[in-house]
Structures are given as structure tokens and as C-alpha cells.
Image (cartoon, rainbow, N blue to C red; front, side, top):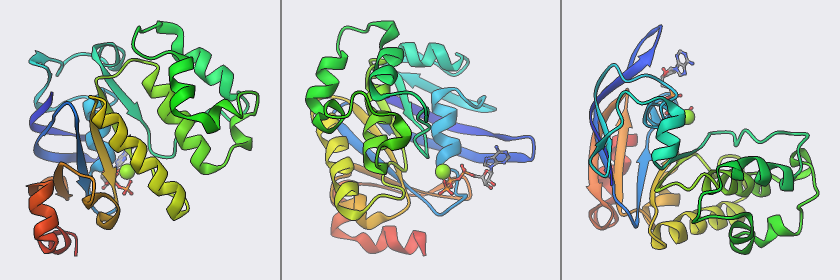
Length: 229
Ligand SMILES: Nc1ncnc2c1ncn2[C@@H]1O[C@H](COP(=O)(O)OP(=O)(O)OP(=O)(O)O)[C@@H](O)[C@H]1O
Ligand SMILES: [Mg+2]
């Protein structure tokens, strides 16, 4: 389980996260909703160690990661799929998988990832910039899986995708959670994620304004929608 307690972080211009509490449990999807600029990416980058923690605490299965650099958090099991996917345009699918797998974690191999994502298997020799948006997103997820995460942080993975492809990406996120991963899913549109979320947090100006379990959010979606209006 990933735990963030009273997390504060930001940039030279000022503090963005103003004391965020959040847990992401194994086998579940925690959706983080919020308007543009609410602090979703800042939260994910702070959890992954790309931004330093100003105060508060991050722990994974009880181990304090607060001061560990990004590469050590990755080794501890935090995998980030960044907003905008950030694949390398001129590298092929196969080259991405080979690079990502250099740590040779036991649980995920390129063969296992390709069995899960057969579309990528058909495009192994394609350059990433020739892939569709959905395929690029699958590649970004495949790359993160090959680092052997216990927690997967997905930053707006459906951004720019057609609805049916977006649904495939969300189904994959749910399937990975069902297989035992802890999944944190930052998303702009509540409609998309309320159906599959086990936990829902709404961020507003760097603060948690709503924290509900998924069933409560589905029973009373107005509480989430009001916080986003
Ligand atoms: N690199 C940066 N340097 C300075 N300020 C930043 C930087 N990145 C983001 N911010 C600011 O931090 C705040 C939170 O931004 P963040 O990107 O975390 O929001 P977000 O919820 O991910 O938004 P979006 O839905 O647009 O992705 C905003 O006010 C933004 O302008
Ligand atoms: Mg963002």
C-alpha cells in the first residue's frame, strides 16, 4: 500500500500541494480528479520522486520513501506513466521494451507484457511516432510494467484518445488492479472513472476537497460533480 500523509510540494513559484493525504491499496484503483492546474501531475511527480517533498511523508508498504530519489522509488516499486506518454519518437516498440527491461525484474517480461497487449506485439518493429495515440499509451504502460511496479501511477492515460480506445485503457488499468497492482489514476473526467474506481479523491488548488470510496461516489455522484463544478 502506498501512503501519502500531509504531503506538500511545489515549484520555485510556490507550493502547489497543500497537505495531501491519500492511500492506494494493492488490488484497487484510486482515481484522482481535478480541474486543469489542480495539482494532479504535481502529486504523481511528488510520489514518483521527480519533485522533492517539502513536508509530509510517503511510504510504500511501511517503508519510508520520502527522501529517496526517483530511481530508488522506482526500484522500490513505484511506476509512473507520465502525462502525454513521453515515448521516444524514433525508437521502435521492441527497442522501448528492451530499454525498459534492463533491470530484469522477475514478474514482468516483454513476453508477458506483449501477451497482455497484443496490439503492441503486432507492431514491434514500428517507430513510436507511427503508433496511434492508444498504442503509444499502451507502450507507455508496458514500459512502466517492465520496471516491476507494485504501484502504477497513470497520469491522464486517456487524454486525446477516442472513447472506445480510452475505454480499453481504463479496462487495462482495472485489470492490472485486479491482478494485484495498486493503481493511481489521475483523470479529468469523472464520468470515465467513477464506474471503476475503488477510491475517489478530488483535488482542488492542491487540497483534497472530497475523498470517498467508489461505492459512495457511485451512490451519490453529485458530491464529486459539485466539487468539480
Ligand atoms: N514545472 C512547473 N513549474 C512551475 N509551476 C508549475 C509547473 N508545473 C505545474 N505548475 C503549476 O502547478 C499547479 C498544478 O499543476 P499540475 O500540472 O500539477 O496540475 P494538473 O492537475 O496536472 O493539471 P492538468 O489537468 O492540466 O494536467 C498549476 O498552477 C501549474 O501552473
Ligand atoms: Mg496534469
